[in-house]
Image (cartoon, rainbow, N blue to C red):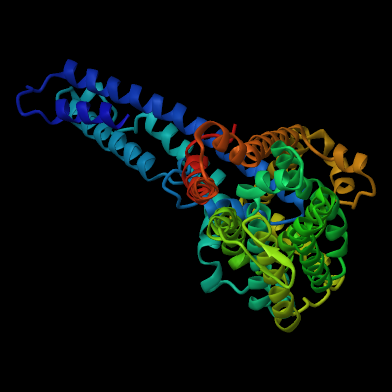
Length: 510
């Protein structure tokens, strides 16, 4: 549209063109066609704005959480966000102004060449101008809620007082050192998972098993983690400190058994040690602490810290294994490249246990009224949305009736969009079985879980068999395998940043 208007402007302002009624009429018609195309665009954007507003409202009702705030805050000013196309109308305003100005000028010029009897005494605006102004007004009315939410999100920490729920979290539940301890737990656990990968095949062979048994040794930790995530999740409903203490003790025992398997010459002790390490996985507690106890204003940074700690642990584990290429005996215990990863991690978890005992602060329990406050805030935001769509001054009773009727139509439209609204409240209740939890999963979530499973499946195959494949085909040493795996681990964080910050905002998730 801007390009067409630029060409029309050149023809309009060209000094070579002689005054010609036919030429002026052609220009006016061209501007009207541009105005008609702009109207189609305005209608399209308006439909998207209304749809987006209703979708966000529906998500707020489903989650019982101010999802709109998060959505708009993370996308309001992002350079690749398509949300800007919905409620930032600077370009549209410029096009409307150009069409209106040029049509008015052409109308005046055409009138100067006509007889006084061929035109009315009062010039009337072109109908397309009136239509464009009405469409812009409707679009502004449809997007004022989104615009308000964007401004609200951007000035939240400066001009708006925190909500009662956030104040409650800030005062009673959050502790910086406790957050650092959770991130340290995440880092150590990921190091513990991957530190044995470069030497697992040699360790298995030294105990009389096949080299490919290293896949079972590495995977045993992940299998046990399936069970540990269940009881740690339930335990974190009552406490965060006790699960972390228990996790550290179990991981200390598991790594000690892993290291002692060499002197006992038992593959079963090796596997039991790795199972213990998996049973000590407290990653569910780490995630729960960030989501429940960290204030909203820094929760995004804490989540990024969790991802960074995991990625750094994936890289540091194999790299540390590459440095432990030595062999000696102490107190009749063998310390070599196979056992040292177990001993090093046992010492690390023991030191972490001491640090945890002195530095961790148990979050205060959540009172029942917090949930009530959250529900009240959701109802208040719904009322705010309705208020933003109403005029500040009602000039007559009929205007008030019209506004109420529009609200009823809007609410009826929301009901029509989703007939399962009645079941939303049931979905918020806690489930008591795996079957009940599975029934709550939407098809989209199931697809995401399947994709995540396949990605982890492919990655674990690559990692667990990398030492066997590279040694058999390329003759790599343990140090070379460790460097290779460390480099792979270092790519995780940059790729996540690119995907999360740029690609996901440029393309649809599918």
